[in-house]
Image (cartoon, rainbow, N blue to C red; front, side):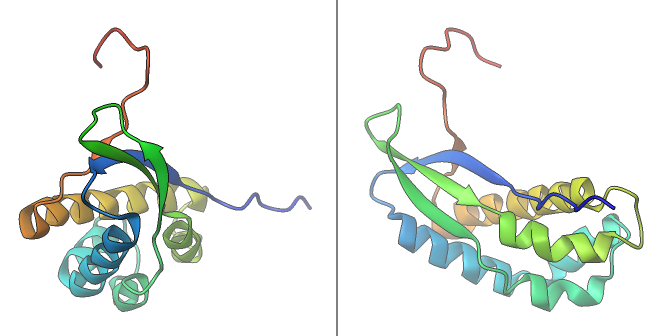
Length: 138
């Protein structure tokens, strides 16, 4: 029997340079902890047990500084959603065959809620990191 590969999920973003990775990490944890209704809605949408929302709200999301952003007014950060994905996999296993994919989808849905609240409540815009040398927009 082959071992399952550990699910990972980390995304690069740019934020205003006056926002530290540590401060952003704290705000993300605060938003997750205070967003029980949103967490329950996302879990329900994916047929996962909504009663697990409080535990998911406590999962650590790691934010690390990655250097200067493309725009001089921004810095690059890496947001690691892996702990959230790992917590979601056991919830998804009874529901679907590929729990890792569902866990990643749910984690990304939760991340969208966090990004929206970062902007609406804290006025911090988190944008996907632009790749250097790309001459076109997607």
